[in-house]
Image (tube, rainbow over all chains, first blue to last red; front, side, top):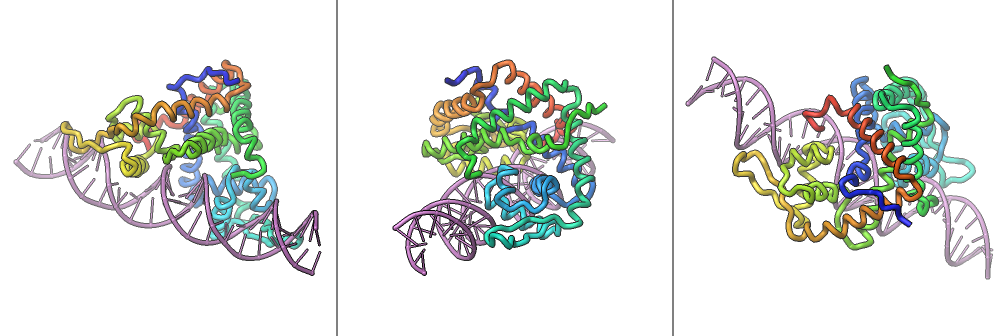
Length: 154
Length: 154
DNA sequence: TTTGAATAGTTGTTTAACTAACTATATGCC
DNA sequence: GGCATATAGTTAGTTAAACAACTATTCAAA
């Protein structure tokens, strides 16, 4: 049963996600100022590959909450920038393993610091326990709405 | 002074705003299923005009956190759909007042119900006080990062 | 072994975001 | 009045997201 505690006037900022837009824009600005020629979306793919190199495109879909065409184009653009390479898998020839280049590994430390700075700026003055509450609420929202899409991450 | 309580592994979901993406996708799906031929972005502009009709494009920029070109195109597309009309202001001929059509007023009740349903689905099982904390944290994040842009909403 | 379904990935099309460069109108100062 | 500056909006170009339709490979069952 819905818990109807939401008022119309408050809908907007939740739907638009203005806070995450602000974070993304600030981080993008830091990239630009540092002369880094990558987008936030490209960075979000690299971020997953830094955690684990050689993911398939399908695995990148799940990890980044994007659909297959989006990942195809992002990998296209990352390949153009010489940051990743598609390596055909020998076990299963349908699969491309996406592998980081040396250039991409060099980006990791620099951009991670920028991302951490951005989050620290965003969360200055916010008590740690409130951040925990916020994180768990956002996770629940995501889980509540995405359950049906789990196996076809569109 | 930054309060360094953020760990690398947690960066991603904040930056991407996956929760608001999930909300937007669910709401878009409801629009599609109801045969409504509008996008979430278009709806977010209509939402502001339902609150106050006749806003200028500049005011829509501030209200929806978008830049001027984005609003130009959204208004273009809303005009094509016969949902708004640009009315040249007589006081200041630089300004377009964006006015809702009868068709747009008809959409209001239906889509607002869908938006409320979506939020209720998203926030089922979340206690009201946690929602309040989350809202305030997201507002602080936005304010922390957008202060410098207040007068040029890019 | 062949057929049909599922999976991995690509392509085409529309809508939108961001930047930069642009036009037109208004305002303020000399 | 004339000129610089600010403001409102548009246009052009690149990147990305969502959806539908497509190809190629794998796998399972008759």
